[in-house]
Amino acid sequence: MKASGSILEATAEPRNHVVLLGDSIFDNAAYTRGAPDVVTHLRTVLPHSWKATLCAVDGATIGGLQAQLARVPVAATHLVIAIGGNDALQNSDLLSLRVASSAEALEIFGRRIAAFERAYRAAIEQAMSLGRRTAISTVYNGALEPERATIARVGLALFNDVILRTAVDLRLDALELRSICTEPGDYANPIEPSSQGGLKIARAIGHLVGAVDRAGAAPARVWGNC
Image (tube, rainbow, N blue to C red; front, side):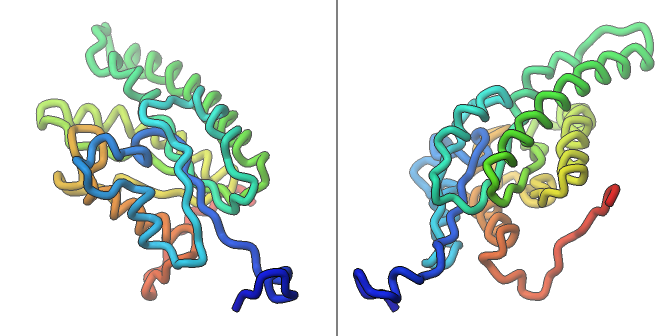
């Protein structure tokens, strides 16, 4: 019920408002060939009383998250962040380095991952400082050519480990996109989600924020230091 200028309007519950931040995992309209993108699917999935806003930018890296946070609407209640995939891509040279031993390779990976972790955690902590319910997302494996897919998955797992440990340490919910976008049709190209994949992501977000019933399926829980 709503009556303009009435007590009912003044005492109405605040509207839930989900804001998507990050990169093309959420900002995928350029790759769907006119079909619905993630935020369009999300607006369909969410109840009518909810709102969804896209602040994510295709191609964004961790360093670009600060500018997106500055555009978060005042009325936002939930932030969902998918960032880090392009930073991982910037380290793709790790997959073809010439090294004298596996130990040398692991040392190089370790230095890069440590730098990624420092930047990622700082960015997520800045997002949390806005005081909204915040969730983060891993990076999916994509639909790479078979000869490159295996080594790419292994390398990406190290970056995703940072994301998941950040979720545990900061007590945040996390979307595990490697378990959501699992079919070739979920991708418009090797690294961008299709409309089909976007629908899966939107449904998962709806479950994550508590707007859509899980039909009895409880989410996984991982407990860290309490």
